[in-house]
Length: 206
Image (cartoon, rainbow, N blue to C red; front, side, top):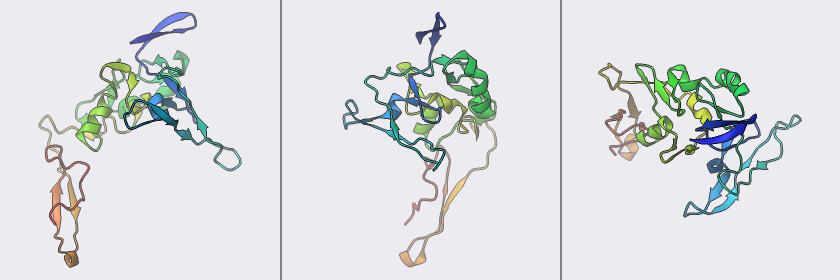
């Protein structure tokens, strides 16, 4: 939780610090800088493409951060969870980025509470946990690797929740194999419990 001044009033927020990108999108410090191997010292900045009305692509632009709080252009947390420049932008953001994949409610901290029967899943359990709670555990104003608009992405609350005794069809990943190379056909169960999510289709029995 932090505070900032808007129209002479003190406003408390859990939104992180973002600069406005070339297409109006929020861009964070983590998305803008290139760190050295110890993940502490900035050694460069990411360049972003811009649009040009004549050829469809324009000059590249960089955002040079000296600290993680240099830019604060999306500070206001809307009722639906989105972070926007000011309260007046909330209605538009709600229309463009409906929260929680339209299958859940956005909570005050910007995470999603999915409706019964749905859940969030993204490739692996680790990525899923990051998608479900995308901010730093010790500082909710720092969103790790994603932007506030992630609560409106299709990954949120778009998977079927089979954890409460719901009968779900078990997905399989098939590898057809090649007899010439002594492969054999395999079919791997792709469930969270099997640990094969994100690896389906890989030959596991050569």
